[in-house]
View 1 (cartoon, each protein chain N blue to C red):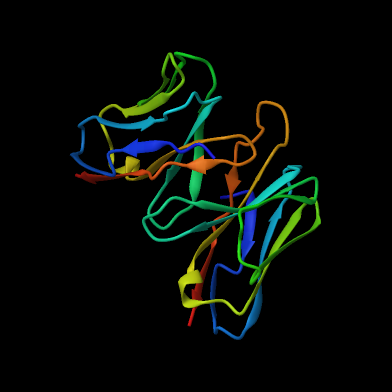
View 2 (cartoon, each protein chain N blue to C red):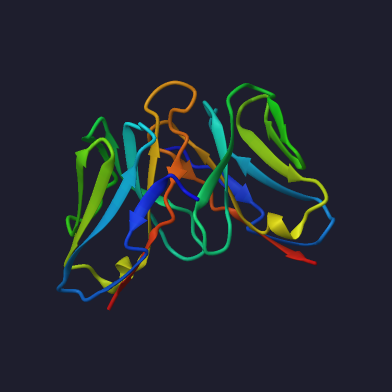
Length: 108
Length: 115
């Protein structure tokens, strides 16, 4: 299946700072999903993006899908300790393939 | 709380044991999945069932044997596993079609240790 490259692998921020993780593909994606996995937990679906250039917001989280549908980003404004976890992008149809994930840690 | 229930939460087994992981969902989803996740790695797809039929097998060794007895249940039978099979095994479900298609709801996982 198509692979998505996700960067950075790790990000440590001070509480209140912003955070961004990026997913990139060499081929056009039909859609992209984002999941969050808390430490010791399981992946939880956050959002799905389908349209070129799509931007969706969930409170402090902003998700973007590139115009060429080859990249996506998740931006968190003013991080809080509850944002700690690993954020995965994922793409595919029945065979959903996950990016490597970005592990976010926060210094309170 | 998750709507996908997995049992057991933890399992320790020897290499000669036979055990099973179980997964149940009551969301009316007709696609069910097994993923394997090693520490600090993303989930890796193992099997997909669609309408109780195996639709994807990601070249998983035969010591892992999936079973889907009905639309709500998914099992993973384990036999003659290796220590490197130790991992978190995640079950997930999704709708097959429509806006929710392929949007996965994961269970809490079964953490397997093979001695």
